[in-house]
Length: 464
Image 1: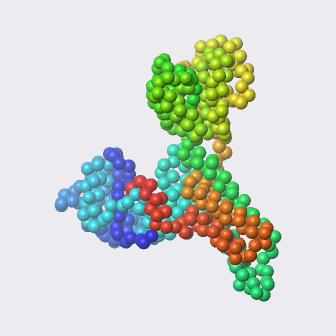
Image 2: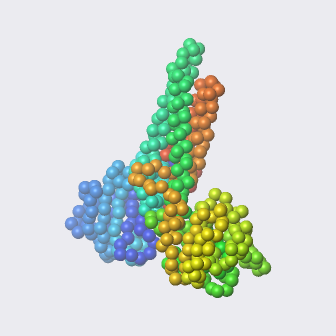
Image 3: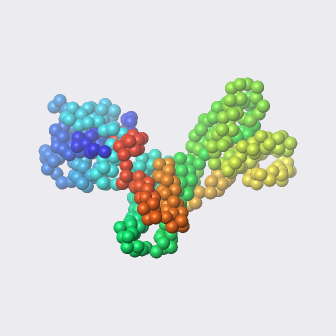
């Protein structure tokens, strides 16, 4: 990708009105450009000031003061982008923000594309591609766990491990290719058994990183939890209770939930994506039938399934429902939630505890209406999710692009191992080693294309 030398600018704070807003500029000459619209209180030019300093003064438009501001200046290469950078902190009025932005554009700056500041940081060597992607993850982090993973990746934890693996592969292929150079002399520079050990060790490390994606994806995007059950079992009441808002319509009329309703909740630092679904029953209404079909589709996508049933239902009725639900449960973890426990006696509750459903050992009793057992259910969800405690230096893959590259690298290194077992020629082995290095390099951006970079940075917010 060709670097552009133009000055870019954008509002870096969220759209709307607030106490303050920040307008950012980056590129050679951006400090001098800002001087044309800024009058410092001490009458000194920004271009004459020391880097990493803050200056108070006014933005002037048409010989009138538009706003009193603080301006931070950073000089290349010691800035986020690696270029000269200016950050203008102004009052949060939308009118002020837009007028300052338009003023900078009129002086020759260009409106930044989504992610262009971070893209320049990557292109200027301030961070590799996986670190750049973690910036977006950090901004969107919604839990302690996702924040911790994004911070670790942004600081280079994942990148450092990939550099280690690529260095091992480089040493590996150097030995193989050195043998090829002296093939006529029949010289062996590396013991094949030792090469197998090295290749297998690399395979194990890449496989460990790839396996971590299931945990990383759950932490980053939330653990999907499908709430299913018959009509009027209390699914929507429970959803509203967990979310602390009236998200779903609650009614005594059967079949009021006809479409999927989704929202997220944070429990003990983990994000859960709750999915309320249409009640399961024999429906004659075409729209309700479509809703029930969607219920079973969402059930297949969930990691955890909460089957909500009325505790007063007969054992026969629960068993009939189990025959409809259990065939759709594959690898999901199923929790049977007996609702409306406030309506039955202690003896009848004990009978339900002993209900023989061998496929569902996990069960809990609640009253969504009276908020009984809900905290216990939240704890049960965290326990069932079984997400290992994430430490500061844990390397966990959270990005689909990284996961796919690791899978391709695994395939390549597996061919190397098989080739060593079959005593294949070194030129075949070297090709597979280079392919493995290629896919690892795709993650960090050592090997990239304009299309890949454009796709990645287009998903960033403007101003970052």
